[in-house]
Figure 1 (cartoon, rainbow over the protein chains, first blue to last red):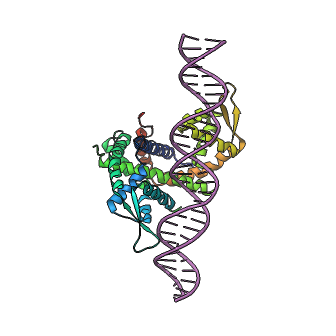
Figure 2 (figure 1 turned 45 degrees about the vertical axis):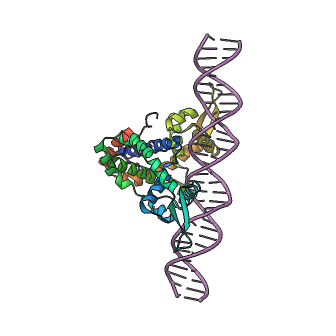
Figure 3 (figure 1 turned 90 degrees about the vertical axis):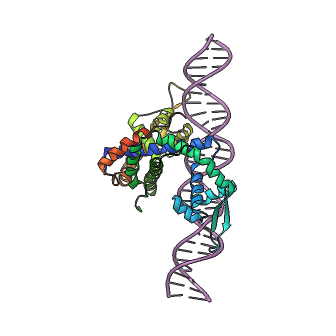
Length: 147
Length: 147
DNA sequence: GGTTTTTCCATGCACCCGCATCGAAAAGGC
DNA sequence: GCCTTTTCGATGCGGGTGCATGGAAAAACC
């Protein structure tokens, strides 16, 4: 029976706990101000950067499950931040566009989101340590090889 | 408007993505073998180490919400892994005990869990880097100061 | 062209979570 | 002792997630 090294277990628990604390702080901060959760921000940002996209492209870009995107877009359309349009060259799909409200919402969320990230991470780790951290996390930031 | 440093944003995205990938791999591995999710393991381990505990102690030890523990214990009792007993010196609470099945379940989960951790983390980061990673994550592994 | 396979997206269902709240027991104030 | 406050744990409700599946369009195959 394989027993992970002590350093592995320590890094493991710290990694999970750190991510939990950080993302929790972020989500809480947004919610307390009546703003949408972080994943909405990611969608808004992706659309603002790349223009209209199809759900499957967003899915690939954001790395979430297909049904998650489908329902996330539902909610955001219902909230008036996005618009579904029929896709000209593929009748199965749609193209998703930002509305004005969506654009404004991203702008409204950013300062709050940025501040939360700064508090949760920037202010707690020195510049050089952040660089080292990013480098060490790089190999872990992609899916475990197709199990 | 505060704009986090580039190193902060990079570390941020890597941290969240790494934790997501790692914990996902772990949960998937257990699930595919018909085993309970990781949080059940944590409860089983805590009880095996410290003997019977009260829900509020487990809550503090595991750092989850009160209602989460309440319902998690419900499910685990229903699955036959735990037992609730009246608490002798506090009629509001209970003491939670492992059953034989709970003990066996933890033993059954460990090799699988350990292997998944090894694959998701141990095999992807060198020994010295794991040490450095744990050190860098330490300040982040506790809740953001009471916001 | 017709048939099979694959891609794209939605959705029913069961489950889990977060919030707010509740009832009951203990602790504290006097 | 009595009253107020705090602690302990459960739960109804709305909503999000994962799984499996469905239907329709496109692509691939022959």
